[in-house]
Length: 474
Image 1: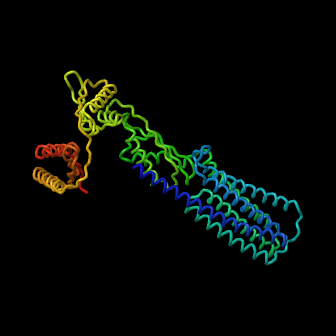
Image 2 (image 1 turned 90 degrees about the vertical axis):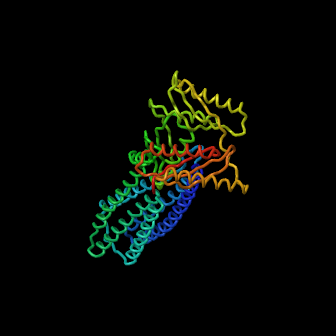
């Protein structure tokens, strides 16, 4: 599970690096096109004397400036986490998007100043040359191409930066169209006021785009949750290993989401068990959230009067490097008696094993004061031995066949399959699967498995350990 999570994180890192390179490529192409458009408008505006064309050229220069800022931010945001920025540098991208919004406001202010100047001045009749129309139409085509190109790239790469820059370019399209319309009205009807009216409409479009960019980036900077806590809770709590989510939080942009999940677990749960739950949560959220950057899972012990004796015993055994199974609690003459099988390293002496198990008994009694006595059965941990001898191979086949015949004759209602036998230090281990009716209770299935195990142990004394996996039909 840990290896799978590591592989997933490596793949995600490589994918994010490739995404950054693609974002940078889109920004470079956009920058070159914006510079060409800006220079063309400024030159033709100065030549023709049409103020709106020159103002539109200045607006395009603002676009080019925003592209430079975006490229700089993209380079910074691509840096890995360091001591000063343990959560990475993604906020530089958000700040860059915020600056683009500020540039939109600056553009609107420049156009407002131009409108005021025209209203205050007498103004001379404008003569619109055909070349001016041709240049503006050409720049309009370029702007439409740039906007379409950036919008599609922003959607494909889920880039907040490209999305903000595309919004800026989109405002330029309306600027250029309004300039063309006003130029047509001036050229045909000599309506000088048309340019002023069109400029006011342009200002409204630019202010709207600025609001969209600034509101989106501000939400990230003030840690507005990109995902609803109820939605995160629903996703995580659907996992079989998670019983209750105490709290779910998220922050960051949609392409760099950070999630914090607090999960309630049994107090005696081991580190290995919580790690498995954490890996399952991370894997589930990676499937649900395409831009997931980080998941932090915190575990909160449940407050309950019910004690899971098997789980608590396993936790104490794990701390000593031991393993337990078949943990049973019963009432004795003086109080509760806890019985269990304890697996110790096969190479230990009896004295060493006894010391370790005695320590386990003391730890269990210390954590479970209501238990009056702990009874342990010491057994060696299974050590799998490779099968090389021909006679032993034949013996394994005979044991597998004998076990299958016994079970199928005594329990014909069950489907016994996947028999595996392998040698251990003191005998043999048998594992198998049994398919039972889907509506049967867990207790009834367990009784069948226990009866089958009792039969096998009585008929095949060489079996040291038996594992039966019960399952419903496919």
